[in-house]
Image (cartoon, one colour):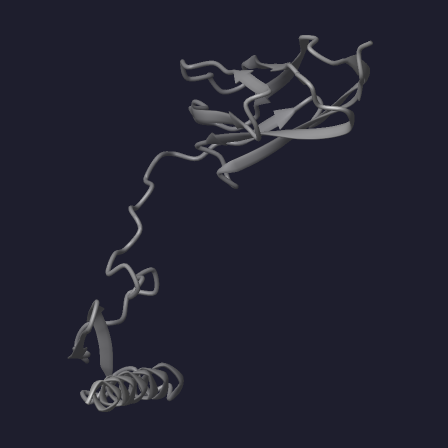
Length: 175
């Protein structure tokens, strides 16, 4: 009996997927017979008077938030720094200098290191157009060894939204 229920459920899912695929690839988006996903396990007829939202994600039943923050541009003097040879358990600091090259204030939402050994410190206040500022990155390799490459991802009101900075080091074992 369980097998029959499982087969019936799989059949219903397969039919729903076929209907969705046909509606997705037929190019007939305005047809009143088009069916769209309205959430987990729900299918509804598409409203032909309302155009489909290309940012809508039927898997999560959400549309991403709109970012209306004015965009600017950023330019770093260097996007990469090589510390060369460093010792384990040392503290290594490099300052990435940048300029807001756009016409709007630069707002850094966050700057994240690729691991706990790479810690960035960035300006929390808006950086005016034409102004320069710094992102200080402290790299503490701990017990890491040999060639290491770490990144800092800067998220700001720029296009693209993310800028990646890179540090490298050859970590030498102590003792």
